[in-house]
Amino acid sequence: MRTAGPAAVAWLLGITAAVAFDTGKLGQRGTLALSDLMPLIAKSARLQREVVQALTQSHKKRDEVSCDGMRFPGQWVNLGGERVSPYICDFGGKWLRITATVRVTDRRGRVFQTITPEAMKNASAVTETNPAWSWTTEDPSKDE
Image (cartoon, rainbow, N blue to C red):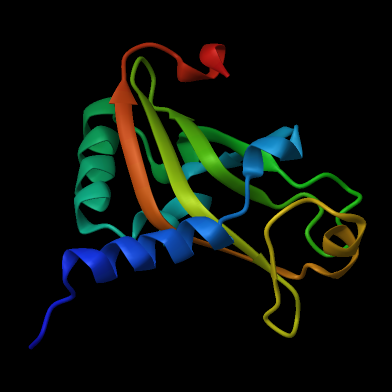
């Protein structure tokens, strides 16, 4: 099996960054349960293990851990109310912050990189990949 060299990896990372959607500009946050984040968490075996360990330590179930994420406002015809990265989850004295590469597309697969009237009208799907995370004992939502 052949692996990609450093130049190829840098090129691929450049493409990923170029098509990532800046969720920070959505301007709203919304709550959701940790169980709603399991598809994203499942993309990393290590993150899954850490979440299971934190649930065990906190004596909580997935539906009992409250998280919040960026929220698409109602002007987004097909995506209004959807939550996307970054997420902050409160395990009770321990917080998990998850970021991901967010991609917003229309029905034909066309990618939207910024918030525009066309994106708000036509975007119909959101995908999240490449989860990255950190744990803290201080509430990170106070920094945002």
